[in-house]
Image 1: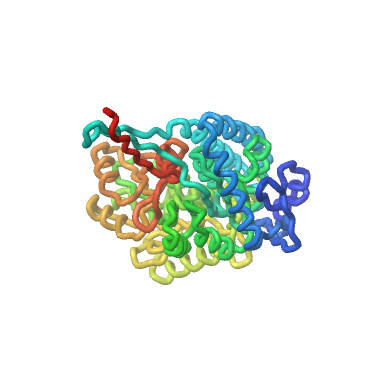
Image 2: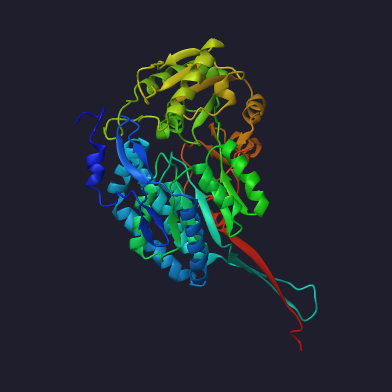
Length: 491
């Protein structure tokens, strides 16, 4: 097969989960207006999906409001049974779902396969977590009274999901909302809508009732405006850029919605001189180049203590140069295409800026003829004034900086408006604890490149977002506390 322009559309056409219509109020709906979905590796069209207008969005909210009264009053165990069937179906169809991700997003097929299983894990988790939405009783401060606090579903919810994890982010949000007893309307990225439509096909098959889960594809501004303005939509969950998050947060404030947001990253990866060199390089390669660098958790600023700096740079550059770039369907590909052309342009702008300010190219090259592909690139002698340090690159460009002391690197790592994830490599347990306490980030990985999953509270500090996804805290984003005082119990 020629992986430069594989027949992705033909593969999808034989996929039982290939769907291009919107799903609203339990119905699959087509419209005259459609939008093109392209294979980012070749630029070839692989589908045309239904575009939803404002009227269809309002129809979805109306249906979600009606369905809420029934879905929210079901036993948590009954909702959990349906969610477990959905999770089982996702796992049974992992190969087809992974193909859809690779076709529209571009990531290597093995990574797409991992994303599907990752997302299914959240559905399994929240299927059980919904039965543990426990309240509390409070020792009364009033004679003959009993004080009770319960957790209740917030109502109709909306989720706006990104293109870099087009399946897992929907599973993580929808499973939590549905387990809590809420109904949800999902607005996937226009670049990657096929994964969302495939997931809801399986949700329908699992027995999720009509009106409980919807998928709308359309103009992101027009659809989101409806969500934030409608008072019946009581919670909004968004994953995307900090810039868009700020706009949504401001507008959602007018109807005082619950808002949870997972925004930008710019993660520091800190390696101390006592770390094992080979292990540190391996972990940093994983943290930098997963999802071809298009990951909010990606290591963006790599700080290496001076005694280890030269050896790390040489070893890391050699490892990066061995990563094969190619179509995600090629089993040898480690780096797929950038999903959006704007990511390619930002990568090249960051490299050009760094080189103009004194950085050195240790691996990779700038190639204007490579389409959406970006060669894994390593920049050394990077300084704090360069764009690649101040901004999140979101691509396979690694920036390596040198530091001397622990106090210095903590200050430099924290000198950032973002606060999602940070990484530390050291053999000194005390230092690892000190760093994890001092770094102003919502998640810290010490001697590991992988720390996410259903049981953990995923989220960041500062401009990296609000709230948490996953864990018991993820369920709380879609629930409200209700306090009841029973008085005159002695009467």
